[in-house]
Image (tube, rainbow, N blue to C red; front, top):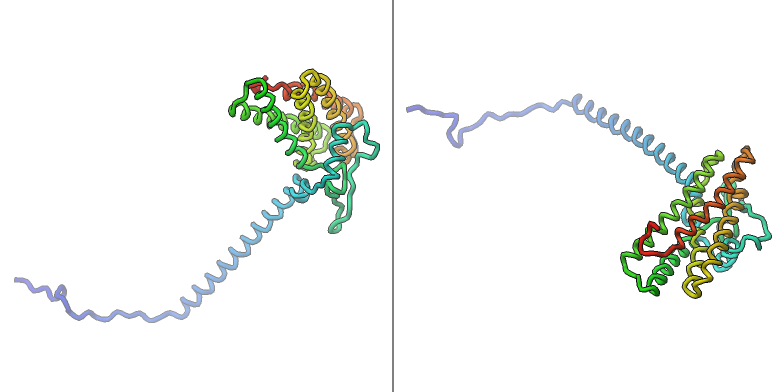
Length: 270
């Protein structure tokens, strides 16, 4: 029989104790402080530079603040629609008004400047276009929720195509600094004319064939004047012949775009 004294329960164990090392603790605390301080400074530098980069790009493409494009009132909306739908009657200038803000020049908001772009009218016009197009289908007995969805997508595609047309024109002329929301706003005014044409088709069918070319012509003139005197204001040197051809192309491109958007059918591709 073997006696295992070490495994017996209640056997006294020798106490184990270690002497604290003050130098080790000091080095540990100092090292941790240096690491935290270094990582904090490095992280602050990275995130600070990233924040400045993001802020600069936002101000580059989005013109101060997105809320800027919704600073409108009744007077502005009424006069802006007159300029868009009847540009021949606009006797004032087409340049935007600037004001000093924070040591730099900034454009005045829409309710102070009739030539400033806004997103209120384009969004309201786009929604009205979809509703009127759905009503037109309903009067012909072809309405369905799926058809309304396709009309919504068709309008978005048309808005995108108009915006791309303006953006490519600016890039071709060496002006790529125009805020993105400015281009989206100017492209969205297309639906103000489309609403008038589609409404004419609902009220009096044959009036569509007069209103559609008229609104197409008016939107073309509005975009040409806007591109020439507002968006191209930052371009210091460009070929006048090239500019005239591109502006003419913008005006002519409105006809197929309006014809496609004005063709209210179940199939959005036609």
